[in-house]
Length: 61
Image (cartoon, rainbow, N blue to C red; front, side, top):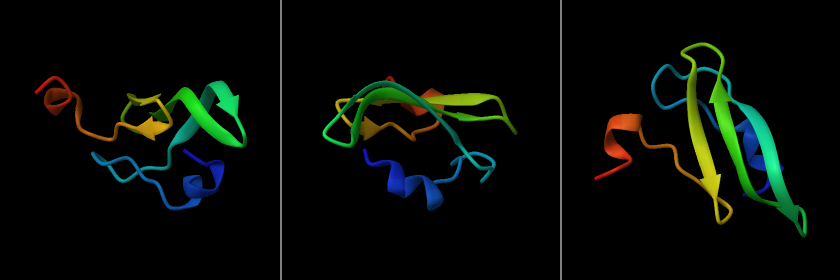
């Protein structure tokens, strides 16, 4: 995931602004980290440079 897309991302549950936490970054891409919504307190993981923006109840399906 690239940091530039943060301007267009929103929480899928409440449409709030997301905060980015970076664990690993390579070649200007975020490899692992998380997107957190301070409005509804939900966190969305970033794994293998792909943000998982599914609601929590759908992530394990």
